[in-house]
Amino acid sequence: MNVELKDIYKTFGAVRANVAINLTIPAGTIQGILGENGAGKSTLMKILSGFFRADKGQILLEGQPVIIQSPADAIKHGIGMLHQDPLDFPPMRVIDDFILGRKGNLPMGQAEAVQDFKKLAEQFSFSLDPETYVDSLTVGERQQLEILRLIWLGARVLIFDEPTTGISAAQKEKLFAALRLLASQGKAVLFVSHKLEDVEGLCSSVAVLRQGVLVGEAKPPYVTKQLVEMMFGKAISVGARNPCGVEKEIVSLSKLSVEDYRLKVRDVSLTVHCGEVIGLAGMEGSGQGLFLRAVGGMTRTVGGKILIDGRDLTGRSYQTFKAHDVAFLPAARLEEGLVPGLNLTEHFILAEEPKGFFINWEKGRLLAQRRISEFNVRGTPANTVESLSGGNQQRALLALLREQLDLLLLEHPTRGLDIESTIYIWSKLKLRCKQGMSIFFVSSDLEEILQYSDRVMVFFSGKVTPPIEAATLTTEKLGELIGGKGWPTKPGEQVSESTSGKGA
Image 1 (spheres, rainbow, N blue to C red):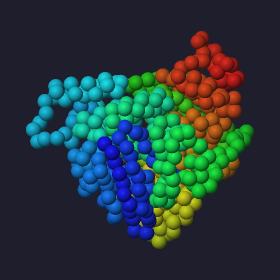
Image 2: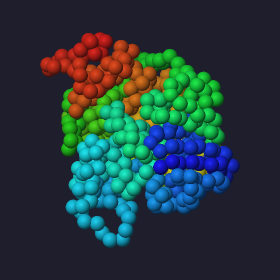
Image 3: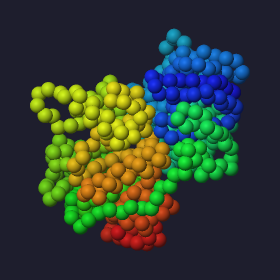
Image 4: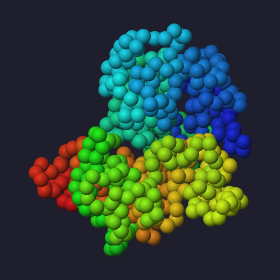
């Protein structure tokens, strides 16, 4: 289906989210929508998919103007959107989630729905069990479920909003294969991202937005420097690696063991110094998330010891860890990190230590304004957190952290952030590392792991490498380890020299 957006405008108060946007997406193509956080990408896609109404402008499908007043309206016209955080129901079975929004009023037979589901899943090489529960799926599998559901509902235009955020390299390859298959079937695919490498490797054309305006379009072969300059209006440089760390020990792990119903992580011993950054790499579900939460007291250990600044906190609660200057930042922003319905001022008041019986709202508002400015959050103290873009929610989470911390535990710290924001956030984190704070962080972005870690630990099916100096690794070598290659073959053997560059 051919899609045309003509003279689209959208404002939110004083914010001009979309300004006079004209864009044509032919059927059978993958159209990249590129831009920094807050550039207006998601707003434009939500207008096309019926979540927002444009203040002005037209949507044309196959040359005919249409009025889309809701997501249900959009799917009737053959338009479906897969959001950055999939809109599914974790307590439901996969097959029950799959049939949500089906056409018609009569209940559909379960056997027929399962047959349709399996046929579609086979077509895209998705390995999903219709009888399992949604809350047991990875982010990548939840995306696969939503793709199947939208196609089953008749979508001929599919919008993907930052779909590679928080998924593994293997899941990204499977996703890209699915998008190429959709385009080959004559569907129009819109791929929204701020990741240049994803857009360059997938899209047949790219439209670049900046501050709500369509500033340019490009076709392969892409020139990365030109795309960056269109996105930000200037050249951006990642800069040199900036290692930190002093001699004082802040974290000591001795034969730490933790497990859940899926896997076990055994006998991890590690000493971390003040200001040091430890990157935790691995395919999603390999044990790095479980380990991270154990180090913060959110998952009970089954063996070993955890010492923070010399204090034995083994078996203690997260509240005890917090009291000893340990903080945790989750990847699930709205589910675990922020409170939907509350504004930014209320969040900053909640994050501070209470003083007295009454809330000083003016002090809270001024604190919110200061932190919003410091972390470049595009919002106001009165904005509710769900009204912010994904990247701005992430910056708000970072802004909520207490200023005095010994250890910070991060899940995908720059998930949803553009290049400039990633560099900015890590500059803030590294500044705190120079003041003595240490960091453990999980990321699916290999470049981020190598750029910002001092040492790296790789997880594979519950196995853990000894810490490896990040400077000795390349993305290729790290990718091999994540895929299970180059690991010790005998007990006590170190990671192979050919893979890590040197033993740990």
